[in-house]
Amino acid sequence: MTRSTRSHRRKKPVSSRSAVSERPRSSGASEFALAPGSTPVLPAVTSFAELDMPKELITELTQQGVTVPFPIQAATLPNALAGRDVLGRGRTGSGKTLAFGLALLARTAGQRAEPRRPLALVLVPTRELAQQVTEALTPYARRLGLRAATVVGGMSINRQADALRNGSEVVIATPGRLYDLIERGDCRLDQVRTTVLDEADQMADMGFLPQVTRLLRQVPADGQRLLFSATLDHDISKLTRQFLDDPAVHSVDPSAGAVTTMEHHVLHIADTDKRSVVTRVAARDGRVLLFLDTKRAVDRLTRHLLTSGVRAAALHGGKSQPQRTRTLDQFKSGHVTALVATNVAARGIHVDDLDLVVNVDPPADHKDYLHRGGRTARAGGSGSVITLVTPDQRREMGRLMADAGITPQTAQVHSADPELTRITGAQEPSGVPVIISAPQPQPQRARRSGAPRRSGRSRRPGR
Image (cartoon, rainbow, N blue to C red; front, side, top):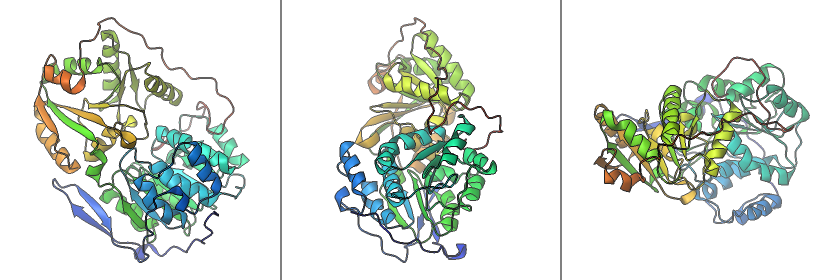
């Protein structure tokens, strides 16, 4: 099979792009639906062999044990490979990375980038997601002889600039660091033919939107745009109106569908018993991911759990990237059993067989809930999402669940309640303090994905 050679079409003026309509939900939240495009959507496939992809990609898929496309891949790949803009929604852990990644690589295969001028771009909101995308796509890019560079904050900007100067066909980047490199003259986007926004709903938030818009305006207007996310709401209309031309829209799972393989529990607790409840849940046999609102709260709880005998570690934006990477590795290996995190861990974190996520602090909205919960029950697995709710949080939590389309199981529990143990595996911790070796920056080999950050430039969203 040969790569599609369909030429890119000239983008229409912004005013003629697809209309967006909002669909009200139960508590004032809204989703949107694009009006049907003028071009028929190609049908989904049942196997990778049906797709117009280079044979090298089919070979690598087989070697990786990926034999049957997930629904989001089966639906979006035919249109993406044909060069059409795509707007895709699929639940967390559903295979979105390969859905856009295979198309991007297939359409870039056989080309060579000039120094500083990549041919394909993936924009992501967090460093962790950038690394996850890089790890997922590297074997396929290598099979095609394509060079990839990861461009994120917290790592050496000079090494990333070197990778771009040496020529990289594919760049996976957070917006802030990519913009820094463009300002330095180390990168130009005028030859990018395929642009991906992963976690597009977060990229449409006001903290990211100005930079994302500025970057997309530097990409050729007749290029291909692929927007993917697990949740889509009215905020994303800002991007679809301006940058997508007659997109193929695939909503494999509605927002509520992102959580259908999970059990959802809302546990009502007393304020005075909250720390004891959290401590016993964290001491369970097996790993648990605990979400809190602030970095300070994360650090405070982590210290308490370590003193109580729980192998805990903290993950938040105040940690350096090497620290964050090593902490995640410790959690994935089981060296750390309780990962205490802010929303930095809500997207782009994949941990095999993680069966429990606990919202120690309830999330701010239903999108945060879906993404936090999506760290479990990935790739068709199952898991539980527990939200601890104090009396003053009950009303707001009810609204959030309605927005998420979830009817949770509810219970009033206390720290020594057998029901808490049944639901979460909670148990009394050993009380013997433990020490987890602090993540330290590791010696860096020369590599395309960068090394510890040495730049003193100011921080921007998406670094």
